[in-house]
Image 1: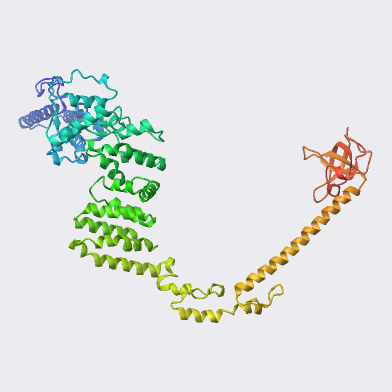
Image 2: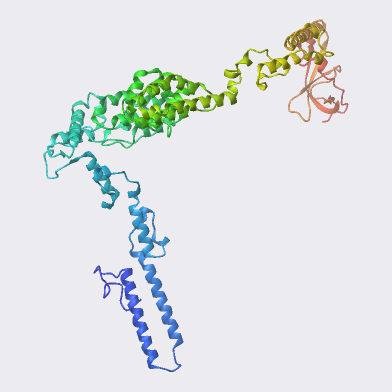
Length: 603
């Protein structure tokens, strides 16, 4: 260490009783300067060669150790940065660490909610919590006099939940005042709605007067869910669209059912929170292509198509045109849900009003959405049913685009008509439907540009098939008796089928006669057959063999044939029985005979 200790002293500049790393560093710097001065004086007073090299090395080593300790000591006294996942041991200097810590502390400012409309600057706040608190106060537009005790008689224990208590406090305390009179009236009205109706109106029971409806809590209380949702009392923890997305990933039908239920329960009371209508409609639809599975979107389109009132309710809940609605219109057209497509498009134009840019953007987006390059029905439906609504708009900035849109549609139709296989037999190629079918002759009209070219090839090939059929097995048929190959093949197949059926009937009849003969043979056979159950070395169950030797009995060892090669194997007789042919344990004709009994039976 230097000339000064760590516990206070000359360089305890902040008076905390300890010498911090920067104070110790200052001490070491001064110590080194003093050391250099002393060494300089010694060199000036002496020209001798008795310089103590060993002493100099020791002092140099001591200086290096002192500097190293000073460099390391800052980590012991630096600010804890673990909550930001920062640790001093990963940094070489205190400056690098402090710079990283300062940056981490201020990162929240990059992602925080925009507050410019309230004249609030994130740079004026040290923490995200302070900033959000100030933003919330500005957004709500009210302030509270802490010296007031008007609500002292109101206790949270008197209310079933915190949101009712908060509403009661708002109504009871005149020291709440509002920077925005309209917002103030709304908050008072919402608080009154909660207090007066929470026990009889469902929506009022789940309304936080200053944060809106608690959808997650309402859904948890009324549905059996395939996933978890947060508890809510004073304010929402999740947006409705987030809740529905989470449920839809597990059960699309349930998510759609819950959304309709929320619309029914909460939308009629959207006046009590300024963002309720958009929460229930626009925010859900706004995420229809970014979070929800396809099944939810298809259900929505079908429901919109079948329920005009629902469509009008959804579209009237917010005023702005929407990119997602435009995509929804195009998909509705593709799905042939024309009621939904027409209603949505008409509503979007109505919302656009005289805003020509919104009208043009909506029109262009829907046209582009209909151009899928594998069918024409979508773009034709737009051309014939929705485009007239646009053409009727008198705005010059809209009318100037009409011709370009018409050309775009016409060019698309021409392209798809000529290249898409779906239209190979329609429109300009409709003649292919009326010409004789050339497939039996290896002709396809799609390979011919005109009807005349095709008919010439057709006549050349019409009777060429006969030479390829002559000399084959035609079951007595004459190819010249048929006009087309199809007729000949049909007759030939019928003849072949007839021949095969006759052959099959003969086989069945023969098999029946054989079976009847065998049955009769068994009935007529009065001979008694002797069957022995023989246990072979390679089997755990006995096999049946016949014998004419009446001396063979249980326990005898016999030689029997086995396998296809009739290999002789020794076996032990474990059963002996006499049977008529009708009751033998195994067919007589399939049962092998015992070759012989061993004369010298093993003991």
